[in-house]
Length: 332
Image: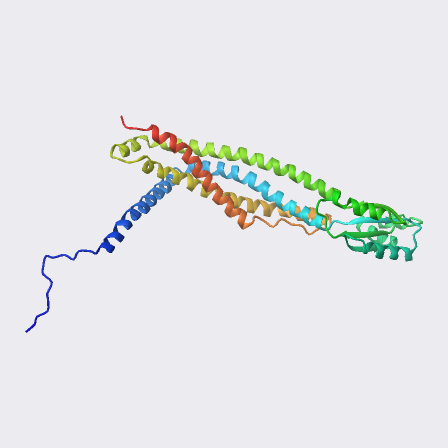
């Protein structure tokens, strides 16, 4: 009678080579994740243990982040308004008073067929006077005039305005040479002035941003230095039992990242609320100029970039302080 083969007591099944290899590479990976998890937990405990100093640091970082970012977002949105106005730029062709109505229609068709012209629209003097009375707020005064002082105008929309007003000068010269045209005006100069002013403010915002980023790094470095000094004895003990510099500095780097995260989120919220509050006044001013322009708030892309950048700056500031001070603490 055959009997089943029974496992002998006391014998342990030996793991295969593949299983042993898989366990070997997983163990250091678990240790690495566990070490970073403990360091992040220590950073969170320290921030919560010193709420006042942590709040002051976060508020300083928030102001340093919000000022240049707010200026950048605001300038970008106003610049977009200038781009929209520039795309709608037109050339005003003022006709002489002695040009008849038939001649005006003929000139309008002639100008509309010129190269570089997308559209030509006639605005006769009676229609121009009616629009002026409506928008200028001087209707009663204009009614007292014995004659219409406004000339007829052909509003020309160019095909392209790349290059600004200088690129439209050849078209302006061709229009000015037409018989019956008294004056040609490019309605683009004030848009270019707006663009120049915005470029100046953009450069100012960039310089301010660099200065505030340097201040933010210095604040973070000083905060981490104080944190290291307060734990000097603990660091000495860790190094006595074999702790490496990387192990010692890891919690402080997480403190910098945590400060940056909190400051970035708070700056994002502050900018969103500030733009919403400012938008009320912007819409009121735009309505006075018959415009529907409004600030569209803090874009998500800019907000996420702000949070990520603040975390990187917090890490960089912590690294500057940790790299120097942790190496200087050595057991005698």
